Structure formats: C-alpha cells, structure tokens
Image (cartoon, rainbow, N blue to C red; front, side, top):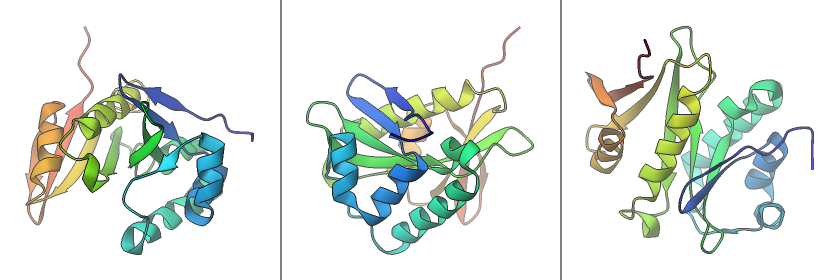
Amino acid sequence: MNRHSVNTLTTVRLEIISLTPELLRCWVEDMEALETQLNCQYKADPMQGFFREIVKGQLAITEKDPDNYLWHTFRLIIRKSDRAVIGSADFKDVPNINGEVEIGYGIGKEFEHQGYMTEAAEAMCRWALSQPDVKSVIAETYLDGYASQRILQRLGFVEYSRDETVWWRLSRPQTN
C-alpha cells in the first residue's frame, strides 16, 4: 500500500490500527477511501471543530517526520465483531528526554461504559512501555473527567500533579 506498514494492536474485542501518513490524510480528507482501505465503517463521533484541527496538526507533523509516525499519528479503534470504528487514540509526540510519552484517547458516545477504551488504552500503554526509549506513559485529564480518570486508575496510572487539569503516570515495571 505504501512505504509504511500498518501497525495493528489486537485485543479480545478490538483492532487498534495506526494510521500511516497516507491513511491519516484519508481520515481528514476522504472518509470513504479510509473505510474502503481498512474495510471498516466509521461510527465514532464525527471529526469536526477543535478535534479536526488537532488531527490536521498531527498530519502535518507526521508528514514532516515520517520515520516517527507511530508517535505522531492517530490509531483508530475498530470493534472486531462488525468492523466499526468506535474511537481513536494517539501518542502526542515522540518520547521526551525523561522517557515519557503522552497518550490521548476518545470514544464515540454510544460506545462508552462498555470497557472498550480501557481495553484499547491498555494495549497502547503495553506497546509504548515495550519501546526502548519509553520509561512511562503520561496522561492529562480535566478535573471533572471522571470516566477518563477511572480508565487510567484501572490501568495502574498514578496521579502526580493537579492544578487546572490532572496529570497521571504509568511507569514501566522495574526489573532486577
């Protein structure tokens, strides 16, 4: 399809597909082409407003730094049973000098409270922490983002800062 291979994480109920730069462009510009290429149907909340601008910004970064696209791109969360795209997740940048990488995620309203986001975030964190330059995954939630906070707590994240938002960290287990 292109010079990048599609990176897919699988869980019991989900496929989490990393969008190559070309697929990320399809997501922004041609949803029908994306659905055809991935054999899926987009059922998550529509990409619009501020979220659309974030995705377009990540597309620009991904195209400038294609070797690190896995750290810049979005991953679509696809339910295996019906090939429905139910949400997305991303890492917001390459690991920083402290070995931290920030995760972000969202799921369509009709798919909330069914454990899908916990399942997807767990797979993404496991993948990230298996990368040599990553020591911890961090996440930011709104003060009233209780659903996101519960997901992070289930995955073992620990709150480390609270001001206008709450910051969380999941560190790689120490090995002897």
